Length: 303
Image (cartoon, rainbow, N blue to C red):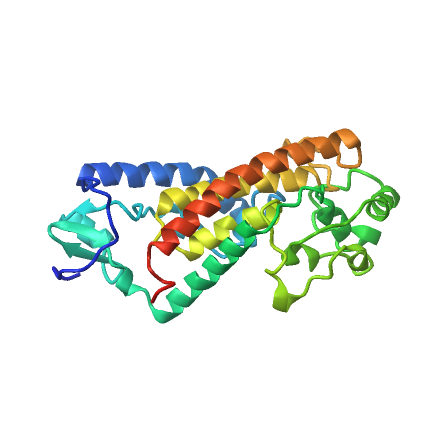
């Protein structure tokens, strides 16, 4: 890491953090993330899996170690010290005028393309109308006809298979997320209002979808370390709440591990699902806009 004049991202006149300040922030981040990563590692060591929480580590490719590692927000700088230089080094970080800042010029061409793709998905999803009428039927469509009951060894179906089938057949199936649709039972796929394809998998993403909102965590870690760990953590935290609703509304009986069902087979359950879906979507809207703002400040669209 060289003492070379650079053009760091704007810091909005925020004073540079001292060694004690950023180490405290890093430790606080590590401790809050470990509330999730420590149990995950313990389960994996025992050969066990949690049907709700482990999804955040199995489906998404970001490691527990990376999630635990703290990075400052884009507008924040650190006072230049040997400890800061050791942890925040090149090419992402540079020293200039006695402080350590990020240098967006360190982005590779491949990294820029990934961020441009993420920006396209984020903005396109933001600009589409939200749909709050799916009622979580994707999880039911996955086990239609007894197909691939993934969590059977941990959590049984909470309704007999015949009633599961009848519910899928009686309700509109309106899934807009390809990575949910592709796990539908073969006989359930024709029931979906839209036949989703890999090549156009992001063309139907919309801000009411709990999976599209969960994927904010994907676009956040794709954008690391440029967005900083606070925003990454907020996206992870929201993803966990979305996952809980996703599984509570599904066909599995999770009461033995502390999750009461949201009974979408009833009108009361559908009302509860939609209310919570709207609340989580509103939070996702704020985070999506923040992600767009922070990534756009890197100047990748004009590069």
